[in-house]
Amino acid sequence: MVVKSRVLRSATNGELHSSVTPEEKPKRAKGATRGRKNVKAAAVKGDAEEPSPSPQRRTSARIQIKQLAEKELLVRQRVEILDETDSPSKRKKKNGPVRSKRNTKSKDKAVAVPVSNDVTKSKDGGASEPMEVCALEKSTAADEGGPANVVEKSDHAKVKETLRLFNKYYLHFVQEEEQRCKKAEVAQKASKGSKSKKAAPEEDTKSKRKRPDLKAITKMMEANEILNPEKRIGDIPGISIGHRFYSRAEMVAVGFHSHWLNGIDYMGMSYSKMVIQYWAEKGISGFTVFKFRLRRIEGQSLLTTNQVQFVYGRVPKSVSEIRGLVCEDITGSQEDIPIPATNLVDDPPVAPTGFTYCKSIKVGHGVKLPSNANGCDCSGSCISSRTCSCAKLNGLDFPYVHRDGGRLIEAKDVVYECGPNCGCGPGCVNRTSQRGIKYRLEVFRTPKKGWAVRSWDFIPSGAPVCEYTGILSRTDDLDHVSENNYIFDIDCLQTIRGFGGRMRRSRDASLPANNSVDGIDDQRSESVPEFCVDACSTGNIARFINHSCEPNLFVQCVLSSHHDIKLARVVLFAAENIPPLQELTYDYGYALDSVYGSDGKIKQMPCFCGATECRKRLF
Image (cartoon, rainbow, N blue to C red):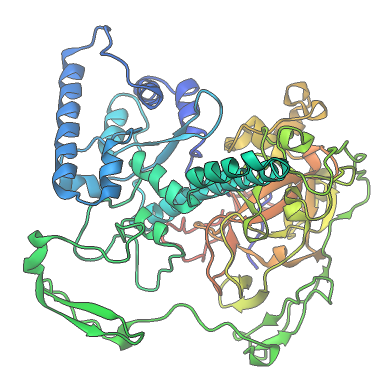
């Protein structure tokens, strides 16, 4: 079994293992770094707010030449877009506000430059504005005192990052749509008694209605965040055979498709030399299908159906169809959905043993939970974020949307959910993580990583998967325990204070007075979490989830019954859309050379996650 982290790092378990989270990077650039990086962050922030007349500041001749070259490049890019784009949706993009500009030397290099979705906070503290930094800017920053060792992201990482950014925008607009529908429903009820005002709310509702996925892709187009925005012949970097998309907008976001509404794309007559033959025929459904035979690139090998390897298997429909079944339900019927265990590796096959399953946290010796916090005064279900006291703790908005049974919009430092003293019921959207496991999970044996977990169901991004349960203990009581690989430190407070290289995610949430980080004087509490969850002898499905350098889950601290952040619940959420039978993983958050043995020497463990960006070592 792969070792579980003694450190719960919010940043590393968040969005694609960047050394600085998207929400945090510009802020750090403003306060923590010097020289060129500060100047760039300020420049982008000013550009995102509103265009201003040419500044009267004195600048060097070198900077003036560079600014002139950038302006000329921008003009050329706009001319190229006007020449190549014919669709109404593209014309709308050209006329819309450009919130960030890509600084590249040529059109060819514009596709290949690495893009990082840095974010700057808007004036009103609302939605953040993405910023793109190209390779030219990074190298310049390194030349003038910035970080010298900038690692370019792989194409696979860029695709994953772009899809996660799309899903984040998508869920934000889903929340807007849900709020609009609630307001329209209230207005409709209020206008029932007045015949003259019946049509007005309906008319306003129709004019404001728009699909969240189209809003999200529009936002990415306006911010120049579409990956591979130009039409191209051949493969899309970072996308391989078998990749699954769950909406047409996702395909547009990564440049795999260019029309967000129309089903058929076109290349234009300039690409006719690539087409050898084309014809039309009736398809299986009776519709006309247009087919094209393209000219093969020189040296390109033939691809036949027997060369295509399908990475996704078939989901079993019943227990009798499960191959290698060693346990029908490791939970002992504690969960609403049974969790089977399979083993096709060991001979003879064995089931997972040595632990007692528990679906909720057990309080250990010497630990006392705080009293229940005061709740909100909502009735039935929390609706208005302006009146709900729990929503106010989350930055004046609910962290979840109702869609798909509840999804977290984005990762936060801490999420405040409704608790026992709240007036709302169990169906409230702000109790999403308290509803237990709702996906069909399976524990299966692997050749190198021990036991692992996968889902038989599709898991949408932001959906809660499970809580990390076990015995809630004091960290001091377990310091002497060796070879316990299932200890999970609750270090939310350390993450908020930024100790040990931890990076914050979102600063929207409040911190109650009893958790004031400014009042901590104990040096040990500043660097070492006071409490942890020990899942060695008692735990749930989360104890079997392995580490990955490119995880599809992230760790989220949640407060519900009380507001003591040192005793927060640890919940695993989907960081992206997860197809069935894909292994579930999260980043354990180890720093290399951070684990010592009983002899005082540094311990090392290889990583077998198999990710494209694997660090090759767990610690």
